[in-house]
Length: 100
Image 1 (cartoon, helix red, strand yellow):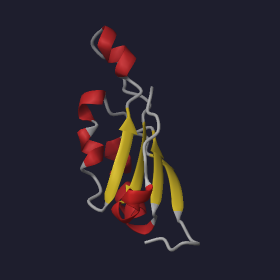
Image 2: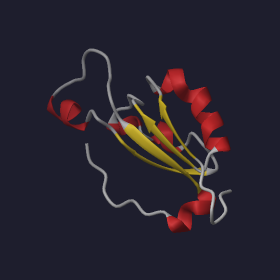
Image 3: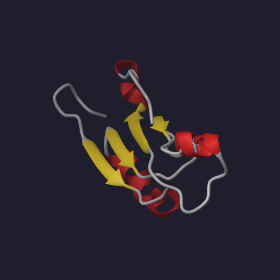
Image 4: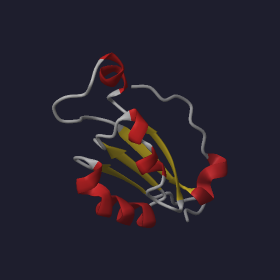
């Protein structure tokens, strides 16, 4: 856990959750905060991120909300961001805004 003077962070482009899952697990164990982009999850699949790292709180949004609400998704998925914060820092963490 981070002390008062040392907060460790990382950023990681998953190129899809299936491809980046194992590295994301490692980063969540080693860092206090992990910023992940390009998870490619639809809004109804964000639970996969929320349940990924047991000792982290996850804040995530999908980049496909608008596309899926208009029609069926075709082609490859895209976008999406997530922030993983150690649960020990949960009382210091507040989601201010989440949007596509």
